[in-house]
Image (cartoon, rainbow, N blue to C red; front, side, top):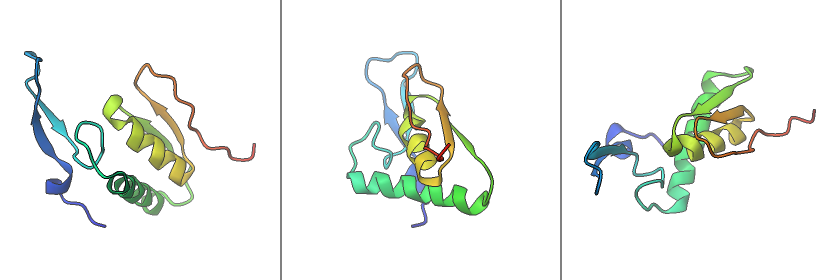
Length: 100
């Protein structure tokens, strides 16, 4: 599936946050707005396919910045067999086994 900006970017009003009243959200990500799980997983797979096509035969390190990118980055990394790190303080173990 091809995604457009309209599919992937929405502006949401934050409640009880006077420093940052608005937030840019991806409605298919499933982080801030409820989404049918298959739609989120389809998005993650499409991103992984993009990496796979663009970086054939290259060893990849994917980086998920902030909490909102951890699920997308982790799943894309697992799908393409890439290493993965994220910038949150939560400990995540999701680098795929490469038979080493």
